[in-house]
Amino acid sequence: MASPRILSLLPSATEIAVAVGRGEGLVGRSHECDFPPFVEALPVCTGTKLEKGLTSRQIEDRVQEIVRQGLSVYEVNAALVRALKPDVVLTQSQCAVCAVTPADLEEALADWVGTPPTLLSLAPDNLDDVWGDLRRVGEAVGAPDEAAAAILRLQDGLQAIRVRSAARGWRPRVATIEWIEPLMTAGNWVPELIDAAGGEALLASPGQHSPWIEWEALAAADPDVIVLMPCGYRIGQILAEMPSLHARPGWRDLRAVKAGRVFAVDGHYYFSRPSPRLLESAEILAEILDRCVDERSAVAGPMGERWRVAAVG
Image 1: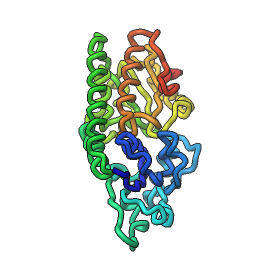
Image 2: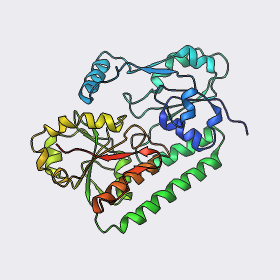
Image 3: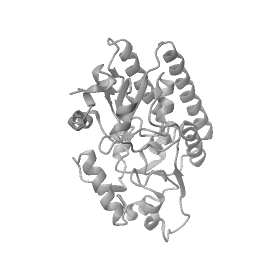
């Protein structure tokens, strides 16, 4: 069966379309869709109003400024969307400041000439929802069997990680930081990934949106391990913001800091994207927790550097 014409405006949806065997049907992408590498050659239909090079605090302030003006953080090239004539448009409705939403597409879809495309909006809160989105995308693009097979592979892979990690003999308490300034911990599916990797998630609950927290809450929890995974951040960006954590009162008194168990992971390609690469995200967490037991553990994965020990100051 030939693939429908697919416009994906969400990085995780792009990865899902490829995972169910419909990569050849992709005709356009968002400015953030960059994996697999071949999708970067596709026409870009969106842009952001956020300037490059901002710190986490500056990004948060800029986002709030845009929202106060009643505007969207994103721009959609309506003319290009119409010209691409997609049969299916993939987007999301979970987070208005994280990616393009259906509301951002209103102009592009208004007064559509001919049969309008099917609009599929994803909004997963936990791993079961991610599997459900895989299934929904598979059905929308005519690949339900491929989607079912992909789900099974991911579930089997997570179970294998869970079994291996259970043999570690230590279940560390793990705090995952999804934003540095202000402080946010990683919720949604991340606590489930921590559990599969053999840890106990702190300060966030499975299926609940990532919560903002006060510094005092992190200090009181005093985690065994801290994993920094700011949404959209590469490792170098995280390390550049470490001084703001070092300046926090009591930072050096934290159990994880004193033990050298503070890690930076790639929050751009992993963790924040509810795609098939959540399996690799769980593998990264398992590698980190293995390293906490045995410092000789490897620090790099098959796709290059995926995590690094962060300087504790």
